[in-house]
Image 1: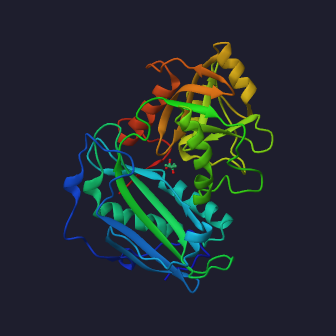
Image 2 (image 1 turned 45 degrees about the vertical axis):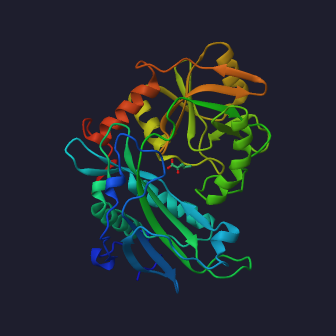
Length: 363
Ligand code: COI
């Protein structure tokens, strides 16, 4: 059993009960054709929070789970998640990119949603054991990875409104290819809001994504792939996109909105900014006015726009729609910052470029 008062607590491997599948589905994996989020690896991790403690840590064959119809997550969205990726490096080893950062961010989301912290030691041990068992699911083709989805949700059988008292922490994984298979067309949203000061925008809470679907669907009907959200109060400042943080190269300055109560503290975002600064690129983390981006696009000074995220990796933006206008951006080539940074991050993950930041965690 694990108490949550010390998020750095380490746990014994033997604390996880392991039941292996007798029928692997690995032959369903075609490394050359992996859609995002459709195929799941053979095993999953589960732990239950009861009586104030995380307990019953187990890895079992991937399968459906059973929930009460009165489950508190189903009714009130008491659910948070993380996204990280495992890669196969040039020596065939399985490595994970910055998992400790995900463990920490999960607990930032947890606090906001009245969910008990998952001890970082528990998170890391569960991840490590699960990836050891399902190592054969980590693909090696360029642009592929094993997507890891930790999540925590309320397990109370109670439809009154109150913080849940029982929870489940799970990790599922699945091989993935690109989230976006081509440069994305985004629309700057000026009517609907994703987040507002004092809300849950910074958390990876399920409800944030549920609320974004209707405006995104309207934009998709207009031929866009995604939205770029603006601040909920004035709609004059860029925040983030539906699945990623966004960055702009205006003249030779890399500009992105500062993370705040309304913007997710992206781990890819942080990695990109860290490397950009080391490369001597001028970086500005500051409020980014829609008017500034639109003016730069009109004047040909918006050299690049791209999304950054675990699932999206580095996703070049092809087109930005704003009000009734559409601005097309130049197609990325190898001289573009977005291409160079993608290459750098891929090199760090594959082990071809030295991991001087200690971002790589070996399984
Ligand atoms: C990720 O990038 O890992 C995310 O969680 C975004 C998700 C909407 C696919």
